[in-house]
Length: 189
Ligand SMILES: [Mg+2]
Image 1: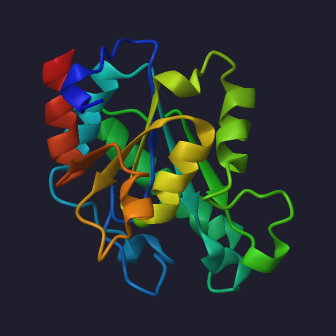
Image 2: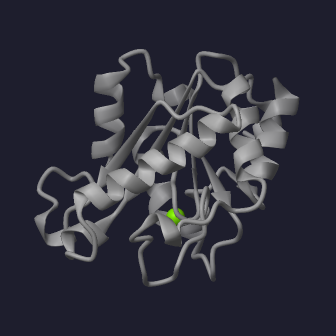
Image 3: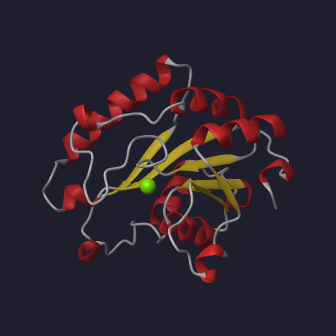
């Protein structure tokens, strides 16, 4: 179903990936400090628009840089607090940020996307979340798998590089940016 056909109301939840959706993604590297965090163009306005559409907006982000010792949990928390301050200043809101910080090998609780540990945690915190009325927005195939595994509608930001047909089948919708996604769903409400 296309985004404009969805009847999105306040019963819906928005799950957002962080790097490459909200802020600049460094290929093969991590945002390790607030100095390295750059909001993508139009993101803050998009988050403000999206706050009017969705009851809850949650971030689900793999941050293995912590497990690798490239930053600490405190560093990550500091980045997120600063990010939330900026979002709030612009009239947006994010209700919770879920992070998967373990190394792949240590991820015994299956928190890392494409596993759905972070979705389960969100559901525990906000029991009213209905995954069938949830949208996962991300810029990687693992985000799409995560959304699919949890039973959400998936939105890919940008274009996947050389996707297989199986990967394509994980993607319900494409949007150029979070801004475009926000405009699309705002108009459908
Ligand atoms: Mg990403």
